[in-house]
Amino acid sequence: MPRRDYVDDPNAPKANSLVPAASVVVVDEAGRVLLQRRTDNGMWALPGGAMDIGESLAGCGIRETREETGIDIEVTGIVGTYTDPRHVFAYDDGEVRQEFSVCLLARPLGGTLRVSDESHEVAWFTPAETDGLPMVANVRKRLTDWRSGAVPAVR
Image (cartoon, rainbow, N blue to C red; front, top):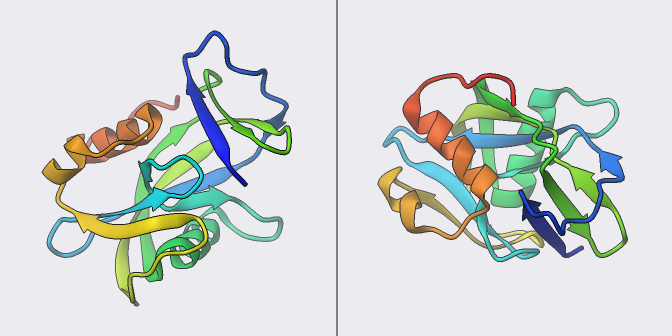
C-alpha cells in the first residue's frame, strides 16, 4: 500500500491513526548498518513496522527485520523513542498515521539478504555511506542518534 511521508508540512493531512511500531538499527561486526529501499516511497529506511497484538516490541523488530530483509537479529538496546506529531504517513486507503516508533538496536545472527514486497533493495552501509542516501528526515534522525551514541530524550 503506497504511502507518502509528511514532516513539518502545513499541508499534511490530519492524523486519524496512532499505531505502535518498531524500527531497527541493525549493526554488523564491521560497523555497517542494514537499510532497505522502500517500494512505497523510494527512500532508504531502517527495517521496521507496526506491532501486532500479542507480540512484544522486540518481537516486532525481529519479525519485521526478517520479513523485510531476510536477516535474523538479536535486539541489544534502544536507540530512542520517536513520536513526532508533525510526522505523519498518508496511505492510499485513507489512513493517516502519526509516527509512534521505538527504534531498537540489534546485531545480526544469520539469514541471507533479500528484498521483500516492501523493498527494491536491501544492503549494508558504513555510517559515512548513509550520508548521501535519500531518506525521510526522521529516519535520518534515528541514524544520527545511533551514530552519536547518545540516547536522545523522548520525542
